[in-house]
Amino acid sequence: MLSELRVCNLGVIEELSLVFTPGMTAVTGETGAGKTLVVTAIELLVGGKAETSMVRPGADEAVVEGRFDLGDRECIVRRVVPAKGRSRGYIDGSLATIAELSEVGSTLVDLHGQHDHQSLLTGSVQRQALDRFGGVDLQPLRLARQRVIDLEAQRSSLGGDPRDRAREIDLLRFQVEELVAADLDDPDEDANLRTEAELLADAGGYREAAVLALDALSADGGATDAIGRAVAGLGDRALFAAVVTRLRDAQAEIDDLARELRSTAEGIESDPEKLASIGDRRKLLQDLRRKYGETLEEVISWRDDANRRLVELEGHDELAAALDAEILIARSALNDAEAVVSEARCLAAPALAVAVQAHLPDLALPKARLEVEVAGIAGRDVTFRFAANPGMELQPLAKVASGGELARAMLALRLVLTEGPPVLVFDEVDAGIGGAAAVAVGRSLAALGVDHQVLVVTHLAQVASWADAHVVVDKVATDSTTTTKIAVVNGEQRVAELARMLSGTPESSTAQQHARELLESTQS
Image (cartoon, rainbow, N blue to C red; front, side, top):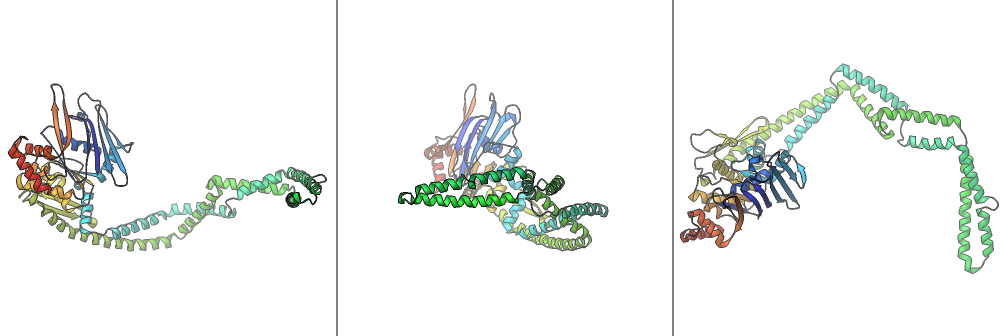
């Protein structure tokens, strides 16, 4: 839900901060007070068109910020409209394009009235709405379509031109033979060879180091003799028994180390031929890395992939024929899946139209007609067509001229299509109606408010009285400036506002009585 809205320097609004609640919120006020600017502000947040004329005279920029409560987290959307230059958008503090605002906004807010950002006006959303209403299972179609895509990609990768294929086979054969001849199987081979080469290159130095260490450990006067003298000096005195034991353990460990050093030293030999052979092998490995990968592991992987590709190309004709047969079967399955989905959509379309049309008479559209048109492959071209009056041609919803008629048609759709963005904004939904129709519109909006957050700009008390929260926008004018203030009204303040909407005179006792009766009937 939209939990908070902050607006600065937008039109007649100098500064506005409003905390919203769940359910239905009515926004009312005198004509020209700026109540529609609340809708404009929300529209800007979801990627609506920004114009420099929106900026309050004398201000450098207009700023709109909305805080959305998504249950497990919050999302803060901000739009800045400068008096000169292009507008900027932000999502959670990071710069965002207008397209990104629209994408995020379409999941958060749906506006109904004379606005561009009405998701139900787009064909893709209408198709999704029909599928949800009719319980159309799209998974078999998705799987069948992906199967065809995957098989055609495999077929394409085989190579179609015989000359291109022959050239690729020759190149791959040379490369695979080169790599197979190199007999690569250990990705750490070069590192191991480098260690061995270092040893062979300095064999004398390694042997000398080992001899020096041996002398220090086991020669006359070395570590072993020193420990022996220490043990002899301590003798068998009980106080030093533990120390003597540890010294003897150390002496045994030194003897083991000396034997290991002696064995290692005896194994160190100068071998110029082997050193040269290692150098040649490392040069080969370096050349292979230069051609096929940064590491030996990548080279080995490249060899295996190239070998698989070579096998594919050499068996091209058989594999191509097999894939062609599979593609024919997959396309047939796709056609069947498309037919099933098309039939399901065609069956759901009239049922959806009937369900929506049942709400239209109560919304001051007694003669209106709605038709759901399904066409194209798998019935993917879905169009909601609407005519408000008899004799009028059914037209796509996007071409309905009257904002009030469009808003009420959208309201009827929303009453049937309960899924959608969590925030629904209605502007002009009560245009040209009154009496029982206004009551029906208010009741319908309140019903939507059970599962959605509904914001409605209205000039009818019969609609506003159904709201869970009531916001009043007032214009404050001086000789030099005009500003707007906004407040949530309750109790007698709300009664006075409803009385003003009913009669134009909030002080009228008759109008106030009528307002109380309205609230009693709608809020009970």
